[in-house]
Length: 196
Image 1 (cartoon, rainbow, N blue to C red):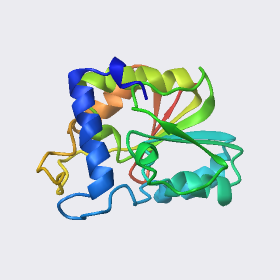
Image 2 (cartoon, rainbow, N blue to C red):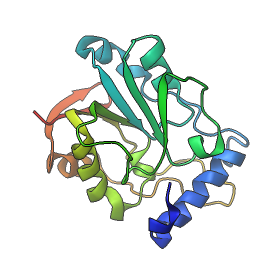
Image 3 (spheres, rainbow, N blue to C red):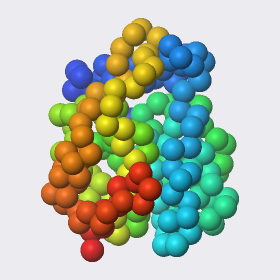
Image 4 (cartoon, rainbow, N blue to C red):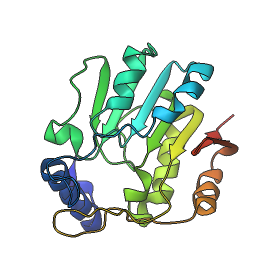
């Protein structure tokens, strides 16, 4: 990741997450990014049978690891602001690991069918959300599957900083992504969008 192109706020967030991945949070010292927030989507994944997926905010990579090992998806990317840089991700050579922020993902236009993101977008700066929507549109050919928290996190960084930077109601997120995508409804607590 080229940090020289980041704004002051983005650099601050990057440092916060590099520290959080290295040291944990107030409620989970030494651990961060270990959950698989996409697991509830597996029934839907089985139904649509994608050929390619990019997980933005993949954490330690449990979801992307399952996509290659359980679902045999041939092209899988795991993108994260800190897990790749700190080396805290599952060692799986079938996953293409990307050290990047959600607003600037180093892949080609129309690279994947689906972009997924679980418990990540609320961690992004509100000033970056429009750019993120455009970036997801640029790289996906079929759509998005998102899980977003609409409340402040109960845990904090070890320095006491908030982790959810963009806390907005569900409708706000649907409206934002509907500027580029068609909102197809929900599957459980996941928002589904298509660009077809």
